[in-house]
Amino acid sequence: MTNYIEDFVYVTLVLYLLAAGCYFLGNKNKSIARTGLLIAIAGIATNLMALISRALLVSRLPITNGAEFILSFSGFTVIAYAFYELKSRNNNAGGVVLMIAAMLVGSIVTLMPEQLGDVKPLMPALKSPWLTSHVLTAIFSYGGFALAAGLAAIQLWRANSSKGEEWIYKIVAVSFVMLTVTIVLGAIWAEQAWGRYWSWDPKETWALVTWIIYAVYLHLYRQKSWKGQKSNMLVVGGFILVLFTYFGVNFLLSGLHSYGG
Amino acid sequence: MILIKKTQRFLRFMSSMKIGLSLLAVIGLLAAIGSGISTDKYYQALPFKVILGLLLLNMALCTTNQVTKFFKHGLKAEKSSQILLRQIGMMTLHAGVVFILIGGSVYSFQGESTQIKIDQGQTVDMKTIFNQTKPFMIKLDDFNIDFNADGSPSQYFSHISLVENGAVTGEKDISVNNPFEYAGIKAYQSSFGYGVELQGESNTGWKEKKTLQESEFLQIPGTDKAIRIYKYIPNFDPEYGMQSKTLRPDNPRIVYSLYQKGSLLDVGAVSFGEKVEIQPGTTVQFNGVKPFSVLTVKRDPGLSLAMAGMLMLMAGTCLTLFLKQKKTGVVQ
Ligand code: HEM
Image 1 (cartoon, each protein chain N blue to C red):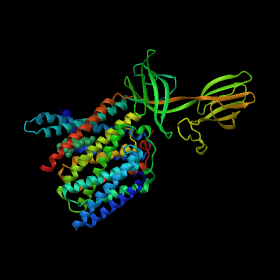
Image 2: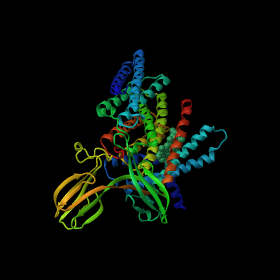
Image 3: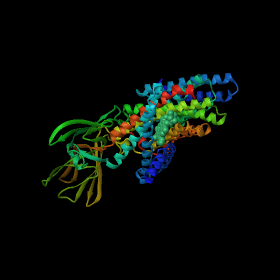
Image 4: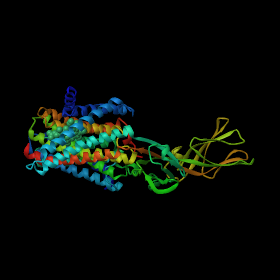
């Protein structure tokens, strides 16, 4: 199975793109949209297969290098979306969310394909239970924010519904808890590994900026004047910051996070 | 009287959520700008600290308000335990941020951090590093690296002894992610390196043993020549040139350079025990390497406060926002 990691990734990419296409086309046609969900679930399966293969290859949780992280991120985003669709019986955001997931998987094959076969052992600094939990909660929060951003984009694009607002609020709230835990666990880990719980390195700084924008959203959500489109823009903006914290910082800015020992 | 009124009005103004959120937004903006400017000084600059200070004031006031309100109206019987817990969570999380900000400022006023290099066998008196600490010394007994099968490092260990009043009172292995803590001082594995053990002799009676650090010179007595350690390569492989293939000492080499009256004469690489002829009758050989460890040492009286704040923030957000879930679906 470990020989097929790349194939699983490519198949996942194609399935997510197909699913997104079905959702966009299925705007008026229920059965096409239903097909979209089925294809998305197949995509989840191959996404998980890719992760399991990586886990077998390196004999640890597949959440350390960039490609592993993105695969977990895309997988969790689509899983969260599937639960949301089944529970809310609303598939308006399917196209946007699946496009986000496809873009994430696409970033692996374009920006970091070599990481899929990389079997180097972990650097000493990365061997910490704090770090493992830090990355796990980051995946949950990022996936949740991706879903919330997809829903908010639809609210902005099409008509705004208060039911949609509530869903967005709930998803952001849970993801915000996860982001808070992520940042705190990261700080505890940094303190153990480097002797500083906060050093204003670019990754930390942008995670803080992201955290602030969602904290502002949570407070303003209860303010009447901020209900509606303004708060949806914060949710979309927040997710753009999430992406920048990951891609922008990794590829444009340097810092402690690009070093491990 | 007017002054008290003015102060009250100022405090009320400073405790508002509008001010708090504006401060948060400003901090986010400034922090983002700073990440593009790669200087450490940016975040230590006074204006930035002042804004963080204002946020601390704002949040301390708003948390106090939350707590007073809670005790005035909070404990009414008709409130469900869920709402009660949620309010407790909310106070805990805001108080957590206050604690973190206080803990951080305690460090910036009172804390210190530096790196120390200790040779194997050397003892360092902590009093010479932080004069506010209780007197104790750290001795580096040994430094070693554990390796993975492929030769990459799996862990770095400094085996140290704690020395108080001339007697060893404890031992500890410091490794990455596993610092040493004693009397308010923490020490972290940060880096390492090697000195090279050199032995020289000549037929004119010169005999010397010495440990040289990388890039250090030794003037050879009775000659106009000097030898300099360029580099210790633990696992030499011609394909990797001057880079060591791995850190594991599978094929060690010492790269040295030889100088005459300050100008470069020769560069060479030898293994341990191999003789380098400086001139007829005068030789130098390298017997091995002696490690040193670099530790980051830190004194942070605000650390426990900041850590407590982080745990409160984490627990508080969990309580507040998870408990909220059951409610919103029905009520809003
Ligand atoms: C540093 C970042 C902050 C974080 C992470 C934070 C987090 C939160 C959270 C999660 C809630 C619950 C929101 C909800 O139930 O929807 C909340 C509520 C609240 N926060 Fe903050 N907060 C922060 C800063 C502030 C500041 C600066 C103020 C005011 C000066 C403030 C005042 C309040 C108040 C009054 C509430 C209650 C709102 C209500 O029940 O309607 N918070 N905060």
